[in-house]
Amino acid sequence: MHKKYLFLIFLTFFHVTMMKMINHRNIVKLKEVLASNSKIYLVLELIKGGDLFDVIKGNILKFNLLDKGCLDEKTARKYFF
Image (cartoon, rainbow, N blue to C red; front, side, top):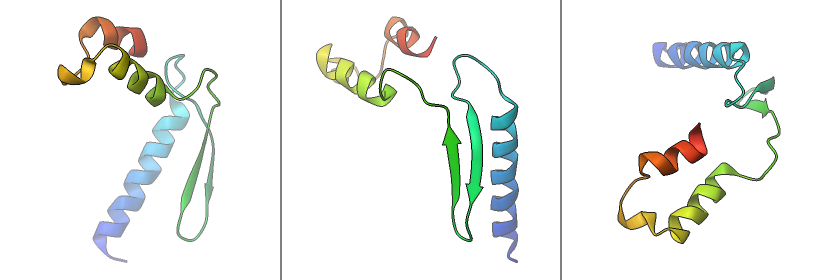
């Protein structure tokens, strides 16, 4: 097998192992890993309240944060801490 693919397999295995070990209230929990011949499926914990991306996107439009180019620290803390 080509070295590039072996490296990608190693990285995938490494990341899945790390995700299974992490237990923190602000990080989505990895519940299960399923694999086929060509795909890997990650089953993640269900988080209530909707998609975080949709919330952030809505507030970017609501507070006109798009012109600033990024979230200020106060707004970022609201979502990520």
